[in-house]
Image (cartoon, rainbow, N blue to C red):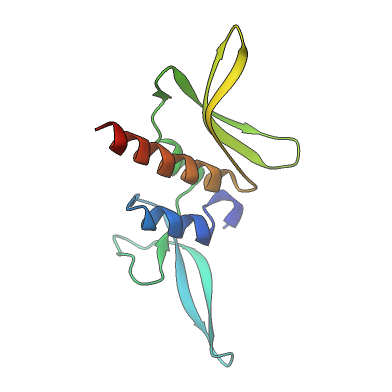
Length: 130
């Protein structure tokens, strides 16, 4: 299981703290390291309909976050692109006579993390418009 295909622990936690719970195929689970008296977070596929509790978090894939994002906000379109340093940009863009304009832009090394930040922002924007 490649952890780069899923949200990091920090981004997964931000998503839960924002009150956004997605159905995911994987999760971050806190496990005890015998002999070390410490814990590690381990990415694992979920088994069935188990619930997340405590320090365990859903770990969405890029596709699971992408489908939750609105295609457009105002006249801006959802955009995701790989950038030169191996990172990722996600946001909403529009192009007019003045060129390409971003409504909001998030950068991250992990594309899923950038999309999570964008989803949190989009949900907050939607709640302010209501």
